[in-house]
Length: 144
Image (cartoon, rainbow, N blue to C red; front, side, top):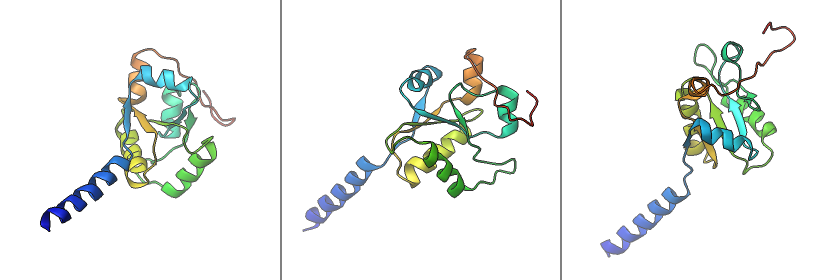
């Protein structure tokens, strides 16, 4: 009898592990390729960071954390849902070094069980280090 319960527990746990979404780490080359595949690239840094370094061309600036580290996950997710073309569209998160995008990516994949979520390992810093193109994100009130 104990073996039967052990097998049932194993099956339940392993099936849950198989369906849990995982965050995927991408290189700059991977991100470049995914951009041509209609992936949704979201830069979660602050407006000042966008202005300082620019954005990956084709990415969407959607700040997650403010300068104090606070966030409004509900509002951020609403914005992402508006940008996402379909529920299965790949989402790639970008931050400065990969730390914040990893945190947000793990939140999306593990807590919300969103699939097809990845982030740029080493962030925009790696992108710039490899001399990949960036573009400025300027509003009418900003000087770029």
